[in-house]
Length: 195
Image (cartoon, rainbow, N blue to C red; front, top):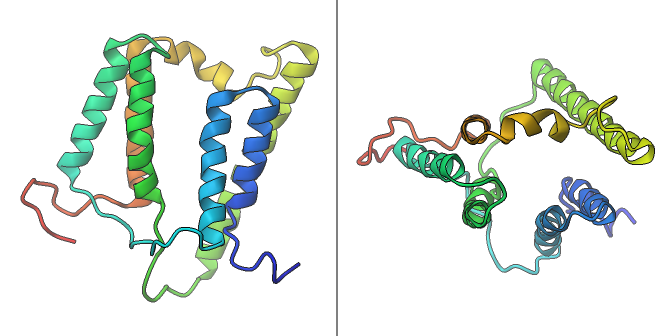
C-alpha cells in the first residue's frame, strides 16, 4: 500500500473529498472545478502528463494590477452570476493554475522550530475552519435552518449581492493570493526585468 501511494500529492485526498462532497450536494460548478483539480493531480502523480513543472512564476506588478482592475470592472458593471462572470472565471482559471502549479527547485532552507510551529498553527486553523464549515452545512441541510449556525457563504452573501462588495472582495482575495504565492517581481514597471 505504501508503495502504491508513494509520490502522491498530499492535496489529492483533500481535492477528491471536496469533489465528492460537492457532487453529493448537487453543485455542478464546484464539482467540475475540484474534479478537474483531482484529475490533474492524479495525472501528475502517475506521470501521465509529459511536462516538467516549472519554477515559481514571477509576474510584474503592473500586470497583476491590470488583471485585478479588469476582473473588478467585470464584477462592478454586471449582474451577479451572469454570463460575464462565467467568462471571467473561465479566463482566470487557467491563469490561476499556472500561478499555483509549480514545484520549488534548488536547495530548501532547514526547518526551524518557529517554522514547524507556524505550520502546525496554520494546519490546525485550516482543519478547524473546514470541520466547522462542514458541520454548518450539515446542520443547515438536516434542520432546514441556515441562520442558527450559518456557513461562510451565507454570511458573505449580503456583501456579494452588491457590485461594490463583489469588486472589493475579489480585489482583497487576489491581493492575498499574490502575497501568499510571492509571485510579484521586485520593481513592477513594464520594463522591469528583475527575477
